[in-house]
Amino acid sequence: MKNIFRFAFRRWDKIPNDELKGYSIYIFLVGLLIGCLLFGLMKVLFKWSFNELIMILLANSVFSFLFSMVIYKREWIDEKYGLGYDGYYIVPGRNEGMSYKAAIVLITTAAPLFSILFFVMGLHYGNIIVATAFLIAMPIPFILMFLRIDAYENKIIVTPKQLDYCPPFYFMLGQLNAMAGLEFSIRTILISLIYGTYPLIWAVLYFLFSFLTQIFIASPDILDNVVPFDLRTVQGYKKGSVIYLVLIFIGYGIFLVFEGGI
Image (cartoon, rainbow, N blue to C red; front, top):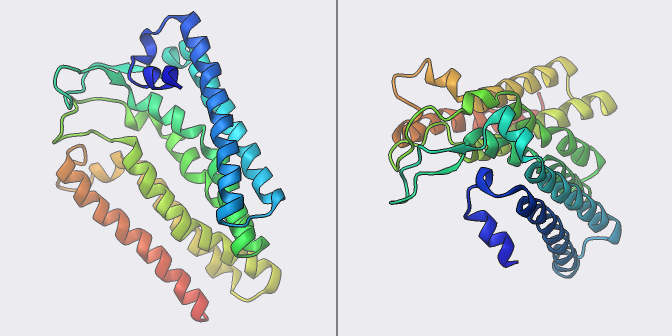
């Protein structure tokens, strides 16, 4: 376990290859261990079924494997996206760190885990329609961020007052929209196709609104070109987040309209 913590505080692109291979194996094994611990914890606390927990355990294993493979294939990732960036001035005396593009590659490896986790939650607390909607919706933020990875390239000095297009911030907003807009809109389409409860055309338009909102969130450079403030700064991000959250809550409001009868 000490090796994992030691790895977390080192420059990924400067670790010797032989040592890096060892880290990738450690990371995979630790990921499996964490999965097993969560298996037992969820069984005790949430009373989930064995089959549900097995699906989550398998998804966690896939995530651990993908994450460790990204670490193992460092040279390919470095050549294609660039691993390091020397323009961080947040912690005094340390200006090196992982590039934002490399961070997105690592974030993308969690897509299977998020998808299956919410699918199982949908099955346990809802029904197959809710679960299927989550299964379709949850990978979309990962996919769109990865497709727009060039927009997140480090282009400025990162300080406590200007963080550039910081991927975790936009990832969290994207996940919120996936749960509050995309999942609901996909659910309305499924209900419309199966039961005919909602007009299909309205359900499709609802999905298009939620999907365009997701593209908007995954593309901070688009909003940055039309607003009078700089999204690369902390204050600019806060103002931009208000715009994103308004769109997300509009998406949720549309779902309430469907639930009330359109």
